[in-house]
Length: 129
Image (cartoon, rainbow, N blue to C red; front, top):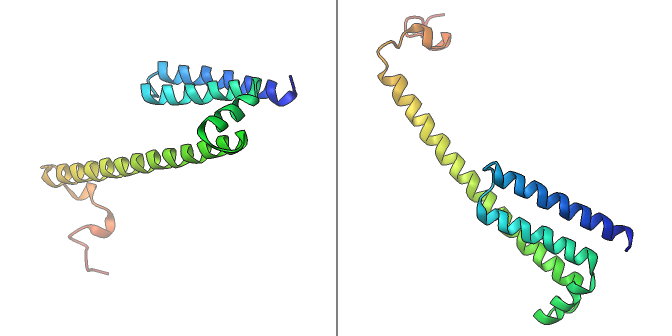
């Protein structure tokens, strides 16, 4: 085996371990566990037997194994960008909802007094220099 093959196998094994630990701690969904496990297993397979990517490329009608890996990587990147975009939108909606709830609570609070207001918004001193 060549050095890059050892490095590929080592990274794949570490990736599998980290993926399972994140799933076990509840930080990763089952779908993401399956996706990342497949990625790490493919990395190990392609590292140990580089000709496998060429076989898969020919079976899918793509010329070279490296082209197949790059196409799969590009598609995967777009998928993860889409997932991150959706997550950001969900977080923005949650923040908006929380801000609205906090504003309603403060607006209805009976103990709203000058202590809670910033100095520049105090109604007694507003407009006075």
